[in-house]
Image 1: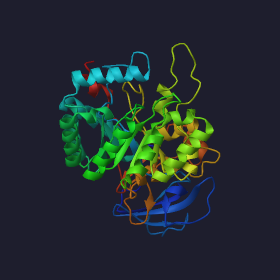
Image 2: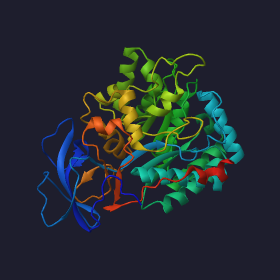
Image 3: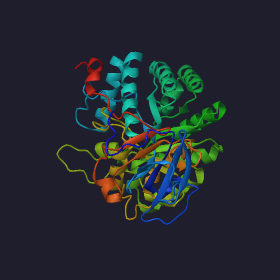
Length: 437
């Protein structure tokens, strides 16, 4: 086991002294901040945060680990992933990097290979990586066309139980909304989601029946006590704006559950007046929006022989300014939708800062992988540092934003309930028997 840049005391009670903490992640502690960073002593006792004190003021009798102004973050929340698809790239690559290429490749791989054993092995590998990186909450979408919905949700339920003390897991059923016309399938899918304590999702597409589809989906969610998390407008086509239709449907049906919209790429292609009107509706409907900057920058505006002209992400700043809850997340990893990635929220954050211009200032940027996603998914106890909360923390040698964002922070230390975890990443060779290498 490697403790990287430091070794916190192996004691029931100790202090992380002279720590630099993103202020947006701190609860119940006030003080001066510079670029949204505050200095503090964090007292850990019996796996919990016992106290948060001004830097240098912790009791002398406690064992101390001097952070020397290094950063301390809460563990991360990754609210939009696809761990059922992860790590199939070597087995079924995207032939041209396009969205349609990804759809076709995943469909072929799912139909040929997604047994319970295959899905579980890849899920476990992904979760081991996420845990090592410091993640304690993941919401994953699961491809849910028959018969895959029963296979993957059963595997997910078993994996969730096995990982319950390490990562809180949530699952969303992902399917094309036109599949709701198959009554037997949709009834069975709703039962599977209910039994698994999941969410209903889906892919929205512009079509003459979109309002009817959304009404049926929302009524089904309301009747079954389900929240909604949709894939929305993952396209550069400015004519596609189902996000507005979703907001109107939520308002029209008086839906009181939570609704999340992922991607929302085409919003950034709209004329200003159209975008503003849509954002106003989204705010009024209480919809949350999650951007997936790495995956969408990979897929969007990809045309053979031509340099991309836009970044592929949604209007995150404008949505946030309108009061819409917003976050960023990993999305796909090492599958036809995104050839790279490792479920590392630090990488997601670092790239999001660049792609979405979350800097200048960076004062509240840390929220997009901590407090914001955890609140959106209904787990506000995760992704923050608060007295009485679990001492689930990620320690960095970086002292300032420039240091934090300039390196991958591979020497970080992860604490769970105040104890250092082994940060050895799983070896890709473990997947050779899965991908046929």
